[in-house]
Image 1 (cartoon, rainbow, N blue to C red):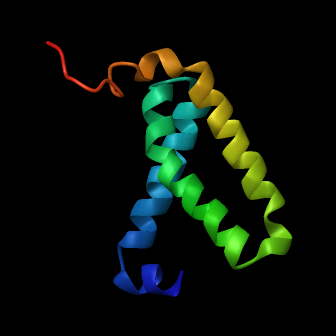
Image 2 (image 1 turned 120 degrees about the vertical axis):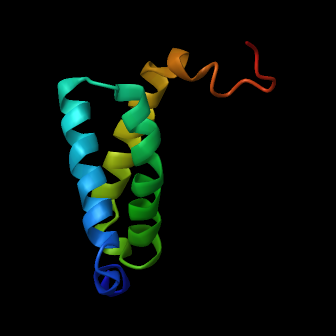
Length: 88
């Protein structure tokens, strides 16, 4: 956290992306895209709590499970993205 704050911009960018993505998720705008953008952040939060603060891992597990559930619900939007060969 300290390293992100010392850069002078990284913390603001990460928090800005999180807030904008949360607003988009709550309003239902670009929901599949927001899930893709938030997954690395969610995984980072999960791994941080799992390895560094295991006593507080429960909330990160809940958040990760909710995001996986939403990704499963919207899986039809990811079929083109996850195709092996691109088609025109």
